[in-house]
Image (tube, rainbow, N blue to C red; front, top):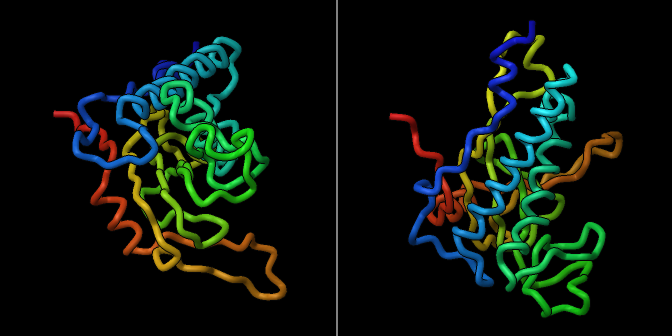
Amino acid sequence: MSDPSEAAACIPEPVDSSGFNKNVIIPYGVTTEHIYEAMQEFVNFLGFINSQLHTRDIARFETLLMPANFSSMVGEFVTASLPKYCNTIAKNQYHNGHPDLMPAGKYSKDSMQYASEGIEIKSSRYLKSWQGHNPEDTWLMVFAFDGNRPVDSAKGIPPKPFKFVTVLGALLMKSDWLFAGRSETSRRTITATVTKSGYDKMLSNWIYKRPQPT
């Protein structure tokens, strides 16, 4: 007999429309309604995939993929989904181009290796100290979520449904990043981390906070 808690965890928590900040400032015509639709589309997608996997006794998607790969997929899904609901932005068609989203029609074929305008999208299980590959001036939007990891079962952590926890966004300057180099012998990917000044900017312009159950 299948674990009922595992079956229940296959259905992510819906995005609560009451959790959006009515006073938030987002550039390029993006609204909280657009963001809600993109987030809910991912929730529906993940619920469909996990439910199908469960019928075949296969682990949920978030417990199959490496944590970094799953986080990347969440961000990539939102990046692809947002332009469906907001026609003033477009996905950057350049492979690994920056930023992920750009003003629709501003750049040729909506494709630039590096553009000065647009929105960079990240997703993370963490609520702060997000990382990027380069410290740079950019409008950053982070989708923070909660969900199981592949190691949870071995650690005795019970199944839990995926849920978006918060979405923050703001224009960050290079000074809002801390560049972390590496030694000559290290194979670690070079990264930059959002500092407290950057986090404070994003927190003051929060986009979504999941309402706490009463």
